[in-house]
Image 1 (cartoon, helix red, strand yellow):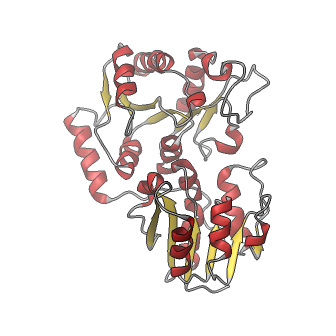
Image 2 (cartoon, rainbow, N blue to C red):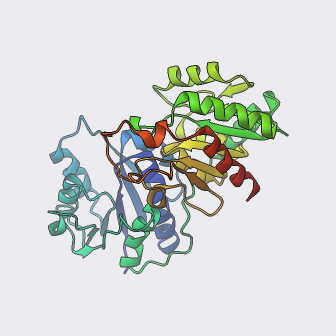
Image 3 (tube, rainbow, N blue to C red):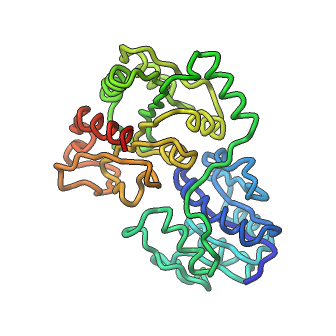
Length: 332
Protein backbone atom coordinates (compact mmCIF):
# COMPACT_ATOMS: atom_id res chain seq x y z
CA UNK A 1 0.00 0.00 0.00
CA UNK A 2 1.16 3.50 -0.83
CA UNK A 3 0.45 6.57 1.27
CA UNK A 4 1.22 10.28 1.14
CA UNK A 5 0.16 11.10 4.71
CA UNK A 6 -0.17 9.01 7.89
CA UNK A 7 -1.54 9.83 11.33
CA UNK A 8 -0.63 7.70 14.34
CA UNK A 9 -2.80 8.13 17.43
CA UNK A 10 -1.43 7.16 20.86
CA UNK A 11 -2.77 9.63 23.37
CA UNK A 12 -0.99 8.54 26.59
CA UNK A 13 0.96 7.74 28.75
CA UNK A 14 4.63 8.36 28.23
CA UNK A 15 5.65 4.69 28.52
CA UNK A 16 2.94 3.64 26.07
CA UNK A 17 4.12 6.29 23.61
CA UNK A 18 7.67 4.94 23.91
CA UNK A 19 6.53 1.37 23.23
CA UNK A 20 4.74 2.65 20.11
CA UNK A 21 7.92 4.20 18.66
CA UNK A 22 8.90 1.04 16.72
CA UNK A 23 5.73 1.58 14.68
CA UNK A 24 6.89 5.08 13.79
CA UNK A 25 10.45 4.00 13.01
CA UNK A 26 9.43 1.15 10.73
CA UNK A 27 6.82 3.25 8.93
CA UNK A 28 9.50 5.88 8.31
CA UNK A 29 11.85 3.21 6.96
CA UNK A 30 9.12 1.97 4.59
CA UNK A 31 7.87 5.44 3.62
CA UNK A 32 10.87 7.82 3.86
CA UNK A 33 9.15 10.74 2.10
CA UNK A 34 5.65 10.46 3.57
CA UNK A 35 4.20 12.88 6.11
CA UNK A 36 3.90 11.00 9.41
CA UNK A 37 2.12 12.91 12.18
CA UNK A 38 1.63 11.72 15.76
CA UNK A 39 -1.38 12.70 17.88
CA UNK A 40 -0.71 12.63 21.62
CA UNK A 41 -1.84 14.32 24.80
CA UNK A 42 0.28 17.24 25.94
CA UNK A 43 1.55 15.45 29.05
CA UNK A 44 3.15 12.68 26.99
CA UNK A 45 4.26 14.75 24.00
CA UNK A 46 7.66 15.72 25.39
CA UNK A 47 9.33 12.41 24.67
CA UNK A 48 8.65 12.68 20.92
CA UNK A 49 9.23 16.41 20.36
CA UNK A 50 12.08 16.72 17.88
CA UNK A 51 11.86 13.05 16.87
CA UNK A 52 13.31 12.87 13.32
CA UNK A 53 10.85 10.15 12.25
CA UNK A 54 7.82 12.34 12.97
CA UNK A 55 6.76 15.23 10.75
CA UNK A 56 4.43 16.94 13.24
CA UNK A 57 3.61 16.20 16.87
CA UNK A 58 -0.08 17.12 17.29
CA UNK A 59 -0.72 17.87 20.96
CA UNK A 60 -4.19 17.25 22.35
CA UNK A 61 -5.42 19.20 25.37
CA UNK A 62 -7.41 16.51 27.14
CA UNK A 63 -9.31 18.80 29.50
CA UNK A 64 -9.58 21.87 27.28
CA UNK A 65 -10.39 20.51 23.84
CA UNK A 66 -13.85 19.34 22.80
CA UNK A 67 -14.54 16.19 20.80
CA UNK A 68 -15.65 18.38 17.87
CA UNK A 69 -12.33 20.25 17.85
CA UNK A 70 -10.48 16.96 18.18
CA UNK A 71 -12.30 15.47 15.17
CA UNK A 72 -11.84 18.62 13.10
CA UNK A 73 -8.09 18.55 13.63
CA UNK A 74 -7.91 14.94 12.50
CA UNK A 75 -10.04 15.62 9.42
CA UNK A 76 -7.99 18.70 8.54
CA UNK A 77 -4.93 16.53 8.03
CA UNK A 78 -6.54 14.71 5.07
CA UNK A 79 -4.67 11.53 5.88
CA UNK A 80 -4.53 8.44 3.68
CA UNK A 81 -3.97 6.24 6.73
CA UNK A 82 -5.08 6.79 10.31
CA UNK A 83 -3.53 4.24 12.64
CA UNK A 84 -5.36 4.30 15.98
CA UNK A 85 -3.08 2.57 18.48
CA UNK A 86 -5.17 3.87 21.37
CA UNK A 87 -8.65 2.82 20.26
CA UNK A 88 -10.78 4.38 22.99
CA UNK A 89 -14.26 5.73 22.15
CA UNK A 90 -12.97 9.24 21.36
CA UNK A 91 -10.12 8.14 19.09
CA UNK A 92 -12.31 5.53 17.39
CA UNK A 93 -14.89 8.20 16.51
CA UNK A 94 -12.20 10.58 15.24
CA UNK A 95 -10.72 7.79 13.11
CA UNK A 96 -14.13 6.91 11.70
CA UNK A 97 -14.79 10.55 10.73
CA UNK A 98 -11.24 11.24 9.52
CA UNK A 99 -11.97 10.67 5.83
CA UNK A 100 -8.90 8.41 5.60
CA UNK A 101 -8.85 5.70 2.95
CA UNK A 102 -7.42 3.22 5.48
CA UNK A 103 -8.67 3.39 9.06
CA UNK A 104 -6.82 0.86 11.22
CA UNK A 105 -7.37 0.10 14.89
CA UNK A 106 -8.23 -2.46 17.53
CA UNK A 107 -11.93 -3.45 17.47
CA UNK A 108 -12.52 -3.33 21.21
CA UNK A 109 -16.13 -3.52 22.38
CA UNK A 110 -18.27 -0.96 20.57
CA UNK A 111 -15.44 0.35 18.41
CA UNK A 112 -15.29 -2.03 15.47
CA UNK A 113 -17.46 0.33 13.38
CA UNK A 114 -14.61 2.85 13.18
CA UNK A 115 -12.09 0.71 11.35
CA UNK A 116 -12.04 -0.80 7.88
CA UNK A 117 -8.74 -2.48 8.76
CA UNK A 118 -9.06 -4.30 12.06
CA UNK A 119 -6.06 -5.38 14.16
CA UNK A 120 -6.43 -8.38 16.43
CA UNK A 121 -6.01 -7.11 20.01
CA UNK A 122 -3.48 -9.29 21.84
CA UNK A 123 -2.81 -7.00 24.81
CA UNK A 124 -3.44 -9.84 27.30
CA UNK A 125 -0.99 -12.26 25.67
CA UNK A 126 1.97 -10.32 24.19
CA UNK A 127 4.21 -7.48 25.29
CA UNK A 128 2.88 -3.99 24.59
CA UNK A 129 5.61 -3.47 21.97
CA UNK A 130 4.35 -6.51 20.04
CA UNK A 131 0.75 -5.34 20.53
CA UNK A 132 1.67 -2.13 18.72
CA UNK A 133 3.72 -3.89 16.05
CA UNK A 134 0.71 -6.04 15.18
CA UNK A 135 -0.60 -2.92 13.42
CA UNK A 136 2.31 -3.07 10.99
CA UNK A 137 1.87 -6.79 10.49
CA UNK A 138 -1.77 -6.19 9.60
CA UNK A 139 -0.72 -3.53 7.07
CA UNK A 140 2.07 -5.73 5.64
CA UNK A 141 4.72 -3.17 6.57
CA UNK A 142 8.14 -4.82 7.14
CA UNK A 143 9.45 -4.74 10.71
CA UNK A 144 13.16 -4.08 10.32
CA UNK A 145 13.75 -3.18 13.97
CA UNK A 146 11.26 -4.14 16.71
CA UNK A 147 12.99 -2.31 19.56
CA UNK A 148 11.76 0.99 21.01
CA UNK A 149 14.41 3.66 20.53
CA UNK A 150 14.41 7.29 21.67
CA UNK A 151 16.65 9.39 19.41
CA UNK A 152 18.80 11.84 21.38
CA UNK A 153 19.71 15.39 20.36
CA UNK A 154 23.45 16.02 20.05
CA UNK A 155 23.15 19.11 22.26
CA UNK A 156 21.58 17.06 25.06
CA UNK A 157 24.30 14.41 24.85
CA UNK A 158 27.03 17.06 25.07
CA UNK A 159 25.32 18.82 28.01
CA UNK A 160 24.94 15.54 29.92
CA UNK A 161 28.59 14.64 29.36
CA UNK A 162 29.60 18.04 30.71
CA UNK A 163 27.38 17.55 33.78
CA UNK A 164 28.93 14.13 34.44
CA UNK A 165 32.40 15.69 34.14
CA UNK A 166 31.54 18.59 36.46
CA UNK A 167 30.25 16.12 39.07
CA UNK A 168 33.29 13.81 38.79
CA UNK A 169 31.22 10.91 37.44
CA UNK A 170 33.01 10.35 34.15
CA UNK A 171 34.74 7.13 35.19
CA UNK A 172 32.24 6.04 37.83
CA UNK A 173 29.59 3.34 37.89
CA UNK A 174 26.41 5.43 37.97
CA UNK A 175 23.10 3.82 38.92
CA UNK A 176 19.96 5.83 38.25
CA UNK A 177 17.03 5.33 40.63
CA UNK A 178 13.40 6.24 39.91
CA UNK A 179 11.12 5.83 42.93
CA UNK A 180 8.12 7.56 41.38
CA UNK A 181 5.21 6.24 39.35
CA UNK A 182 1.88 7.59 38.11
CA UNK A 183 -0.16 4.98 40.00
CA UNK A 184 0.13 4.96 43.77
CA UNK A 185 -0.29 1.18 44.01
CA UNK A 186 2.73 0.59 41.74
CA UNK A 187 5.18 2.39 44.04
CA UNK A 188 7.61 0.18 45.89
CA UNK A 189 8.21 2.77 48.61
CA UNK A 190 10.79 5.47 49.29
CA UNK A 191 12.26 3.66 52.31
CA UNK A 192 12.82 0.54 50.20
CA UNK A 193 14.53 2.53 47.45
CA UNK A 194 16.76 4.21 50.04
CA UNK A 195 17.87 0.85 51.46
CA UNK A 196 18.43 -0.53 47.96
CA UNK A 197 20.44 2.54 46.93
CA UNK A 198 22.74 2.17 49.94
CA UNK A 199 23.25 -1.52 49.21
CA UNK A 200 24.09 -0.84 45.56
CA UNK A 201 26.42 2.03 46.44
CA UNK A 202 28.30 -0.13 48.95
CA UNK A 203 28.50 -3.41 47.02
CA UNK A 204 29.34 -1.91 43.63
CA UNK A 205 31.14 1.29 44.68
CA UNK A 206 28.49 3.10 42.65
CA UNK A 207 27.28 6.68 42.51
CA UNK A 208 23.51 7.07 42.84
CA UNK A 209 21.60 9.46 40.56
CA UNK A 210 18.02 10.15 41.64
CA UNK A 211 15.54 10.73 38.82
CA UNK A 212 12.53 13.01 39.24
CA UNK A 213 9.98 14.96 37.21
CA UNK A 214 7.41 17.71 37.70
CA UNK A 215 5.53 17.39 40.99
CA UNK A 216 8.01 14.87 42.42
CA UNK A 217 10.38 17.29 44.15
CA UNK A 218 9.25 16.49 47.72
CA UNK A 219 9.39 12.74 47.20
CA UNK A 220 12.86 12.75 45.71
CA UNK A 221 14.12 15.13 48.43
CA UNK A 222 12.81 12.72 51.07
CA UNK A 223 14.47 9.80 49.29
CA UNK A 224 17.81 11.62 49.21
CA UNK A 225 17.51 12.43 52.92
CA UNK A 226 17.09 8.72 53.73
CA UNK A 227 20.04 7.53 51.65
CA UNK A 228 23.19 7.30 53.77
CA UNK A 229 25.55 7.06 50.78
CA UNK A 230 26.39 10.09 48.63
CA UNK A 231 23.76 10.70 45.94
CA UNK A 232 22.99 13.30 43.32
CA UNK A 233 19.71 14.72 42.08
CA UNK A 234 18.97 14.86 38.40
CA UNK A 235 18.88 18.54 37.42
CA UNK A 236 15.62 19.95 36.09
CA UNK A 237 15.18 18.45 32.62
CA UNK A 238 12.80 17.88 29.75
CA UNK A 239 11.86 14.30 28.93
CA UNK A 240 14.37 14.11 26.02
CA UNK A 241 17.08 15.50 28.31
CA UNK A 242 16.26 12.92 30.98
CA UNK A 243 16.61 10.27 28.28
CA UNK A 244 20.12 11.54 27.56
CA UNK A 245 20.97 11.30 31.27
CA UNK A 246 19.70 7.73 31.44
CA UNK A 247 21.71 6.81 28.33
CA UNK A 248 24.87 7.95 30.13
CA UNK A 249 24.15 5.86 33.27
CA UNK A 250 25.52 2.37 33.85
CA UNK A 251 22.30 0.82 35.22
CA UNK A 252 18.75 1.93 36.03
CA UNK A 253 16.29 0.72 38.68
CA UNK A 254 12.70 1.95 38.45
CA UNK A 255 9.09 1.41 39.34
CA UNK A 256 6.90 0.52 36.36
CA UNK A 257 6.66 3.96 34.73
CA UNK A 258 7.38 6.08 31.68
CA UNK A 259 11.02 6.61 32.74
CA UNK A 260 11.46 2.83 32.98
CA UNK A 261 10.49 2.45 29.32
CA UNK A 262 12.64 5.44 28.35
CA UNK A 263 15.63 3.86 30.06
CA UNK A 264 15.16 0.60 28.20
CA UNK A 265 14.69 2.53 24.94
CA UNK A 266 18.02 4.37 25.25
CA UNK A 267 19.87 1.14 26.02
CA UNK A 268 20.74 1.40 29.72
CA UNK A 269 20.31 -2.02 31.40
CA UNK A 270 17.08 -1.54 33.32
CA UNK A 271 15.48 -3.35 36.27
CA UNK A 272 11.73 -2.79 36.57
CA UNK A 273 9.89 -3.34 39.88
CA UNK A 274 6.36 -4.72 39.43
CA UNK A 275 3.23 -5.61 41.39
CA UNK A 276 -0.32 -5.27 40.00
CA UNK A 277 0.85 -5.05 36.36
CA UNK A 278 2.09 -8.09 34.45
CA UNK A 279 5.78 -7.49 33.60
CA UNK A 280 5.66 -10.01 30.77
CA UNK A 281 3.26 -7.62 29.04
CA UNK A 282 4.57 -4.27 30.29
CA UNK A 283 8.13 -4.83 31.47
CA UNK A 284 11.25 -3.12 30.10
CA UNK A 285 11.60 -4.47 26.56
CA UNK A 286 14.83 -6.18 25.52
CA UNK A 287 17.04 -9.05 26.64
CA UNK A 288 19.49 -6.82 28.53
CA UNK A 289 16.71 -5.74 30.92
CA UNK A 290 15.10 -7.55 33.85
CA UNK A 291 12.11 -7.26 36.15
CA UNK A 292 11.29 -8.37 39.67
CA UNK A 293 8.07 -8.91 41.60
CA UNK A 294 6.80 -10.57 44.77
CA UNK A 295 6.48 -13.99 43.16
CA UNK A 296 5.19 -15.64 46.36
CA UNK A 297 1.79 -13.96 45.86
CA UNK A 298 -0.90 -15.45 43.58
CA UNK A 299 -2.70 -12.15 42.94
CA UNK A 300 0.13 -10.65 40.87
CA UNK A 301 -0.86 -9.07 37.57
CA UNK A 302 -4.36 -8.17 38.78
CA UNK A 303 -4.03 -4.73 37.11
CA UNK A 304 -6.36 -3.23 39.71
CA UNK A 305 -6.22 0.50 40.40
CA UNK A 306 -7.31 -0.07 44.00
CA UNK A 307 -6.06 -3.03 46.04
CA UNK A 308 -8.46 -4.77 48.48
CA UNK A 309 -5.62 -6.40 50.49
CA UNK A 310 -3.26 -3.47 51.04
CA UNK A 311 -0.87 -3.64 48.03
CA UNK A 312 1.11 -6.52 49.54
CA UNK A 313 2.78 -7.08 46.17
CA UNK A 314 4.67 -3.79 46.58
CA UNK A 315 4.81 -3.22 50.35
CA UNK A 316 6.06 -6.72 51.16
CA UNK A 317 8.52 -7.12 48.28
CA UNK A 318 11.86 -7.54 50.14
CA UNK A 319 14.79 -5.23 49.43
CA UNK A 320 17.02 -8.30 49.38
CA UNK A 321 15.06 -9.84 46.50
CA UNK A 322 15.29 -6.67 44.43
CA UNK A 323 19.01 -6.43 45.16
CA UNK A 324 19.51 -10.04 44.07
CA UNK A 325 17.80 -9.25 40.78
CA UNK A 326 19.99 -6.17 40.38
CA UNK A 327 23.06 -8.39 40.82
CA UNK A 328 21.76 -10.58 38.00
CA UNK A 329 21.32 -7.49 35.84
CA UNK A 330 24.95 -6.55 36.46
CA UNK A 331 26.41 -10.02 35.92
CA UNK A 332 24.27 -11.25 33.01
